[in-house]
Image (cartoon, rainbow, N blue to C red; front, top):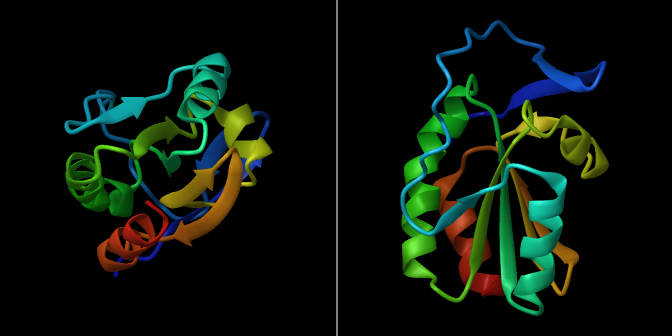
Length: 137
């Protein structure tokens, strides 16, 4: 499995602790049933609307290699589990939201039910991610 890319908060933005080149923007198209979160308000509404359904939050960044590797798996899982809400949050676009959720490495996946975190996965392990979604769906 790919290792997560460590990050740290600095002046409201995220920077790599390792050497990474940032590719051009355009990471927003996800495929599948993944909702790309663009604001704190949208995030709050998506979690609220999910009620007691499982919500999977995918914390990512365009420059994160392991994030790009796991993205098609995440999209496929969204198709396989139509009752689960799949969200994608870019830590560079929504740094304050990432800080409030204590994101320190990417990719990170949080699984919520009833607004409460029930599981976390740090790293791009497709088998563990699929098992967590199946377990909590």
